[in-house]
Amino acid sequence: MIKVLLVDDHPVVIEGLRKVLANTADIDVVGEANNAAEALREAKSRKPDVILLDLRMPGASGIQVARLLREEHSTSAVIILTSYGDQAYVRQAIEAGAAGYLLKSTPHEELIAAIRAAARGRRQLSPELLDELMEEFGGLAREQTKREADLSKEELEILSHAAEGATNREIGMKTGRTEVAVKKRLQIIFEKLEAVDRAQAVAIAIRRGLI
Image (cartoon, rainbow, N blue to C red):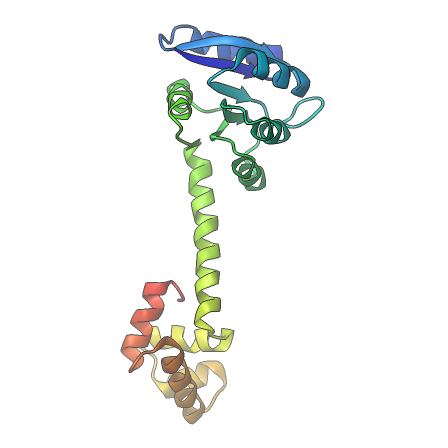
């Protein structure tokens, strides 16, 4: 049996969660709490496998409770269950050691699956939150790649036009440079990307997500 502790300052939410989990054969709701202090006390005495934890509560936030549980070396997996999908909260929850971050609109079957996954040591995010988080991380990765390539904004602009098939003269007209200046800048770009020609430079840039 997976022992679950429910933590939310709204009794109607607690009651709803109890009803959802009541008919799940491998899940047993062993306790409930309405604020941070009660959550910590119940977690210590009940030793649940999984804690469904509200984000905003009297006393301390769910993220603060998750941090305190981690500092106390609690073995309980924490799933933040909230109405707030702000990416800042998601990152803070993950950093605090939460095993999951789900929206209260999550379908019942997905919530149950997340509880089972958390009990097995796996993490779970609401699909829409995961998509946003991956997009954000992808953007950060692209920015890091650009910094490592050491290409300036102007060089990236020239490379983008080159990728579109523009000639040096056409690139010069679009960027306000002479054809000779564009050719020289392209040579610098080739050196930075360790490319032998325009085609290889464009291929490398696309592969790295620079353009």
